[in-house]
Image (cartoon, rainbow, N blue to C red):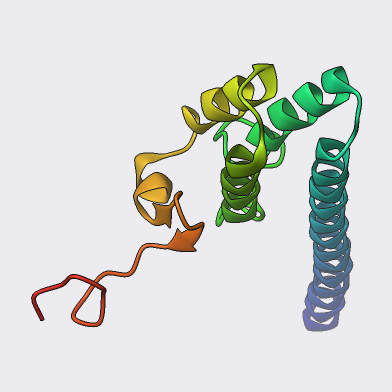
Length: 135
């Protein structure tokens, strides 16, 4: 009886290890897919075709909208997507693309927005070493 239980426990451990391996591999593939989608959206922003650029701007939202397929815990590429929007806003002439860029920022959490300096595209520095602080 003891050997049967030991064999069963060993079999369960092997099955658990294999399942864990496949779960890890799935997460790795998911991270790679998110990275590829981000690179594709950023590359398409450089297109000369206005409709493609508008689509790319809208797709950037996927990286920081909570219910998106690409927004996961710790939101990979969320900060980068906001930085791309910020940089593009500074160089984009007034028009549809600029409007859609700004509209996309409505989906960003307040916490993420307050940590950005959109004028200079730098993280906001807080504390005694911050410029203009009374420290």
